[in-house]
Image 1 (cartoon, rainbow, N blue to C red):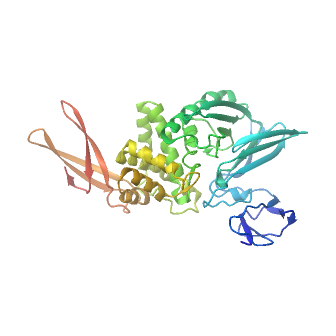
Image 2 (image 1 turned 90 degrees about the horizontal axis):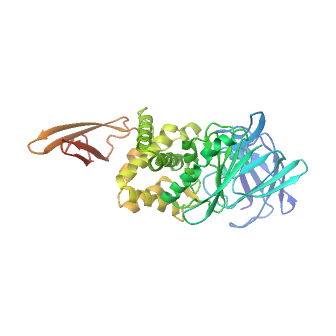
Image 3 (image 1 turned 120 degrees about the vertical axis):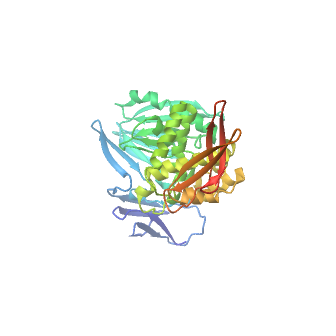
Length: 444
């Protein structure tokens, strides 16, 4: 190729482009920075280029490049998902290939600390400034690269993973909040141990996991260091879950964002099941179902990726996506379900890369031996949910006849096929039966 192209917002000013010590020209149009090369490069060549620029990044999506204060102290932070990376640095922000490694070097006042991806390999005092060098050596999408700067206080500890490795847990918290948050931060170990057991070793075990507090109400799963607006159990569990589902394996299109958000929501539910009480688990499921069924339509699949609100739709991408996983677990059984997810995460074509919904479906089908085309057509691409009417009639002897009727909340699906569990009670015992429900009005 004879030119290199970067995604970069046009309001930013490129000052200089250097290639092998020589200055190059460039052009900007439609948020594309194009740099013609002096001679064509063969595909696969290893090379480098330096771009110097300045400007005031425009807000995009959930923030992109923001400055605020806490307790009167300035804080700067980035949040680039889904389309904000190009607002503050020249990058390739599509979901086609990942950056193989990144070094982030920041000069700031000596009173401030910098939080970022990977390991802090150098911290140098230079007069009234400090220079921080973070090094990350795992593949990463542009939107997961992040920086936060303020007068952080640090709380760090180590934990043992199931494979015997020691993992650094490194938390950067506003100093006025640190002591109050330490008990919550220490719960991170319990969640890592659970996910490690269910889904395999923490994906970035050679570096760290941690949190940086920032000025946004939610959280963001920046690779190896989630940025957090608070530290509830649910938010800690959700952002950590993304390190497996969203960071190690990233959705290859925003249409399939449930591969990130549906999974992180369901894994948060699993912390209630495995680490909480039965009431916690039942309440979590009830809350998700009530949320999903509060409106009649909407698919988990995202038809309009130009709308950030539609991509990150709480009811559809998060809650309904999570309940699709719970239904798949019920349909396939625990052994097949969890093994399929481990296979998906460890697939050499997907691990530290991108996946589409078809990749997940493939692994679920391969492990279980079931054809899930109808399931995904109805529950993922289709809209709505079923409502059941169940009637029973006593028969001679210890028998009953059961009639099952189904209506759907949206015309895109005329019938949802799913195994239907019923608890049948009598004076002597309770029996759980599972009906293979194929059509409305079916008799059992």
